[in-house]
Image (cartoon, rainbow, N blue to C red; front, side, top):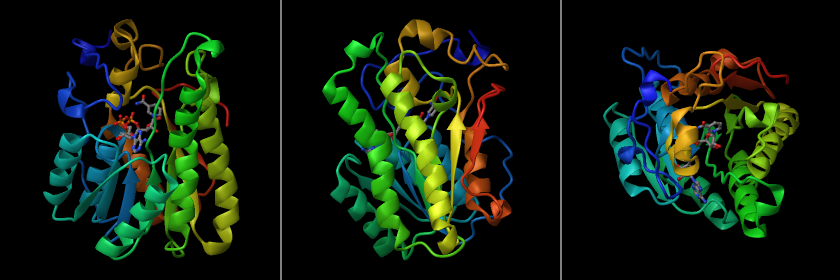
Length: 284
Ligand SMILES: NC(=O)c1ccc[n+]([C@@H]2O[C@H](COP(=O)([O-])OP(=O)(O)OC[C@H]3O[C@@H](n4cnc5c(N)ncnc54)[C@H](O)[C@@H]3O)[C@@H](O)[C@H]2O)c1
């Protein structure tokens, strides 16, 4: 067990709740220095209340962006993230609802534009995973939930967002190391993550004509509510030990990649995936 997980704590309900996590994930590193890289931009982040999404929201706000956060039901986590964003002097709106519903996705984009004035950065980041031992254990209902949440919603948000995006704006998707190295117990989940990678590449080449860049981040094991809500205690005890660094990552170690991909620093990069996984070399 890595030192940061001396008391890893299991939760029984998905989505997990960050405020109940022990140890608490780190969403920003002490001493992070912002440089106005996203000054006066507007970002919409799905799954933005907690975990990687919260860290992205806080980094974006520190870099000068206003933020809209989409989440399913975790009001306490969402309110805390809103406060963290507002503490930087930026605006934050909370949009609660189910990304499996296409109408909700479209409305969330429109609400963002209406309340924050525009949209420059779409971060598709919501996700679910339900580990199963065997293929036969994946019910039709689970299959549909996983695909609707993890990849259909990414299409729906992108489709609604594109009409508001201008040259220089970006879409960033959250895929996973499981898309590259497989996962015997997350067959449906890893399949959606593979789809997200390919969606990223295809949409990127499609939107080059609009000067809109589309990239993705592929996290390895990162200490978030999703993890404590879906893995058993044994897996939590060892979470991250399989990496070269022999530890899980923190959301604070993942979010700076989303800043890079959203900012003009990455102006010659599209259709690519940044791998943040503690040193696992993966192809693609
Ligand atoms: N934590 C990891 O080890 C890890 C590794 C690779 C990829 N990821 C990916 O990172 C992304 C963020 O997850 P996280 O680990 O930060 O956990 P998290 O629990 O903080 O985030 C998951 C988010 O998805 C949202 N969500 C789930 N179902 C939804 C629905 N039907 N409607 C609206 N929102 C819904 C939840 O509200 C939550 O905010 C996910 O796409 C996940 O697959 C995580």
